[in-house]
Length: 518
Image (tube, rainbow, N blue to C red; front, top):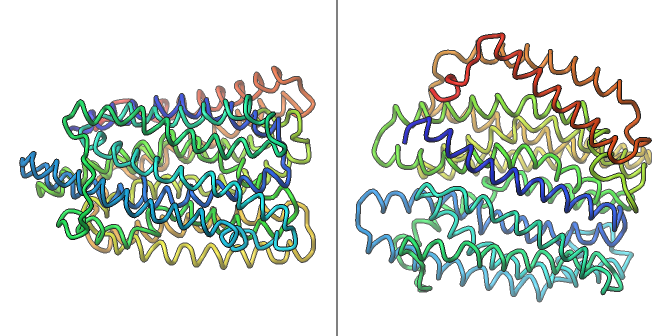
């Protein structure tokens, strides 16, 4: 596959992801408007993040990163019967393991709630609510893990659009739960937990028939001694941390946030949702598209193609990530006001969310680069190097969170949760630096000519963009005082002007569309 093909595949993935993110914005607006930053919402955030982290392990994170290289290795040999047999046994093994984890999570829900919400130990009602929600959200893990297996197979066959579209169903299911189920519950946010479960079922139901059209719909066979399954397991174990380090850091932040004032978990969760917009739209898209290509290049010993494709992905990621981070940092207040400041979500909640959004946005370039750097190792079936980087990253996150947040908590400084967001961003930078250094030290990646020019172009274009965004934002004024339509118009004007200024500056500095393809 040529790099123009990679660009088209990335664009197709990003297009579907964009629709999903738009639906996600509607979901988040409704969530903030209807439920605010309450104790019940904090409980849902905890009950959602735990199975969501495990989803990264058993679904599109660790499992997919280990599964795709082995799948492509078998495909390269041209033995379709062996390929089908591998998928059958992989589906059976995955289903068996996730069933056990799901059952354990449901049975031990009260203990899990106490571990991940230490700040609620003196609040039995909140702990009980977290446990009740966990019993609903844990089964989601089974459906989403099988869906991720199907998506990984489809991506290996260069079918990216449908897997990228399924998250739209997740957001629609959550929206439906808030509108129609929430009024039926004594604690309305309980409807969100049922929405998560329904989303998992819907996503799998939509994606499953696509495997049938490839003739690869699996028959579930459980044999952990199968060579392919054992190889995936061997590759997967070191990736349990590395492929989901960002989510693990957020989970660490969730634990610390439980010790802070009510609403802290919700503020962090909603700011993370905004950070996920550029990451999901571009970072995940580039990483998802590049993994099958890199693994095929490695399997066919095409080191030149491997290096060139990785170089292309890193340049594209940085070209997008730096202005995205800068834009969220400059417009943290206006964006949070426009998306969340309605109904039960107060001006104070808006300001608190903006604090953590601004702090977390600093890490966006590192987060996005890690989405590209990590698959570079997995494509070579090297899972130990990213694991070592992940261990250092998580340790750094814990240490940074304690160092930054403890004094703020002790002094009762408003916005202490922003320290958790800052620690998450700094830990993300540590992860990206460690991965980059390992690639260079091992001789896996050799930067191609033109990096110095590109970095200068990005820096100058961002300088121009900053001036334009600040001017437009200042002209609009206080976004919280505006009518909703005025807020939307103001944000669109600032974002549109910023994008136009950045793109025009890049063009004036000599960057052309063809440079993104070659």
